[in-house]
Length: 232
Image (cartoon, rainbow, N blue to C red; front, side, top):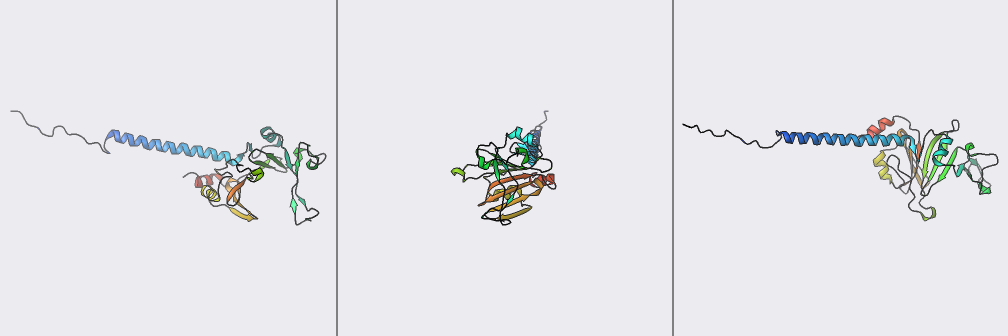
């Protein structure tokens, strides 16, 4: 007599115990982690670049290295002078700017002076101005600045390249969202400056929009700042 066996073959329904599904979820999780790691590695690389490099030069570059990277400076900035006939010292100070090509005798460098004798250099670009300051002892770059004046010649597209994700199109809200609370801030006239010591950045705004960026050597833990502001 033949036996009647029921339920000998059971169909296994797919679910979390299914091997293909487990493999798929594991692969998806691994890919997500690798993508996140790759993004953060790229962000860290950009962060380390922005700590020391801006406008094609680096903090610590010599005057010769700067001329090689950017060319001969068309303008140099003299030391501060106090007073004019109508604004006597100490109420007024200004730094004279000289042209280096000699085409304008009125604004030419003083006799006997060379470009290397000045600690401030300026380069006029199409859409912004590069300002460089040199250490008086080492004659190496100690500050790299960018100034964008959208009112010049009616140009509304002047732009300072981004530094830590901030450029001259950034609003004050965007600066605070990307960089957090500044270490110091001040309002002088119609301008407001925000300083971030750990990344050596000063941002200057007018009408709540950035028009000037200044990069100096960082003070404090730059890596700590990255972990707190960029890692997550």
